[in-house]
Length: 388
Ligand code: NI
Image 1 (cartoon, rainbow, N blue to C red):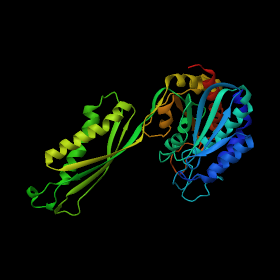
Image 2 (cartoon, protein in one colour):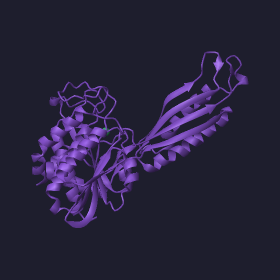
Image 3 (cartoon, rainbow, N blue to C red):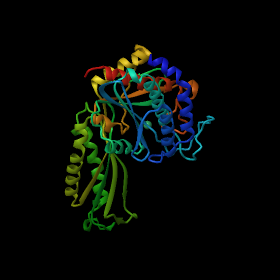
Image 4 (cartoon, protein in one colour):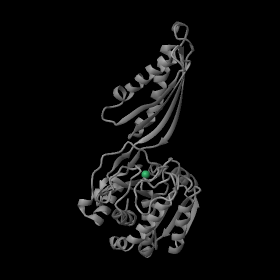
C-alpha cells in the first residue's frame, strides 16, 4: 500500500529535490529551505514548529494512542562549486547539495503526504524532524536541546548512499558510522641556539617522539578486533634552521566504533603526553573536543527495518555494507532512543550517479527518492505496529 502511495508522489518528490538542489544553503543558513518546508506542510495541513533556528518539527497524530516515532532528514549543503552540468544546478555560487541532503528533505516531505493520507489508520504519533546543520555536527544536538526526545520511542534516519547500487538498502544492526573527536596538543619546551641543544628543551624532538608514541595506542593498546584511528594531521613548530623551537602544536582526530574505546582515548592521550613530556623535560597540554559519537543501529529496530525494506523491495533489496569511519550527527538521536540509520542506494553509473559524496560532480539516481520516501513511511508504520 505504502509503495503505491510513494509511486503516486514520485514526481512531487523529484520536483522538490530539484528545487532544493538549485537553492542549496550552508549549515544554520537554511532559511529558504526552512520556508519551503513550511509551505509544503501548510498545504498538507500538518502542524509544525520552528526549532534550532532553521529546523522544523512537524507532528502527525494518528487515530489511536500508541508509540511515538521520530523520522529525521537533514537539510544543509556544502561549500563546493557544482560541476554536474545538470539543468537544475546550484544557483548559489560555491554552495552545492553534494551529500544528497536535498533528497532527504524531499523524501521526508513525500512521506509526510503519505502519512497524512493514512493518518486515520496510524496507531500512535509520527514526528518529522527536518534538521539543519548536519555538516558541522551541531544541528541534531540543538534540535534535541530545544525539543527533548521525551515520550519518543524510536528514531529513523536515511542517508542516500552513492556507494550502494540503486534498488538496495542497508539497515544492519550495530555500529554504522564512527565517532569523530578532535584534539590539540601544545608542547612547551625551551628555545635556544641550534648549535647548543644541551641548553634547550627541543619541542620538535618532543613532538616527534609524541607522534610516534601516539601510533602505539591503536597498534599496542586497543584490541586488534576493534577498529580505531589516531591521526595527527598537523604539526606546527619552529621558525628557522638554526633556532631550537620552544613550542610545538599537534592537531589530530580519533575515530572509533565502540563507545568504550572512544571514551578511553582522552585518558590515554593524556597519559602518553605526560610520559613523553617528562622524558624530555617539556610541558604539554591536551585540549580534547568531543565531536560525534558512533552511530549504532539497535538490533530490534534493525529487524523491523529489514522487514520494511523487504516489503518494499523484496529480499534482494536488503544489502550488507561495511561500516564507515566518517561521522554523522544522527548519533545524538540514536544515543537517546533506539533506532536505525538506513543507507539507501543511489548509485547508477548510467545516470552519472557514481561520484563520491562531497564531490563536485556528485549526483544521485532519482529513482532512489521513491524508495526513500516509501521507506520513511513504511518504517514508521511497521515500528508503531510492533510491540517492543
Ligand atoms: Ni551527509
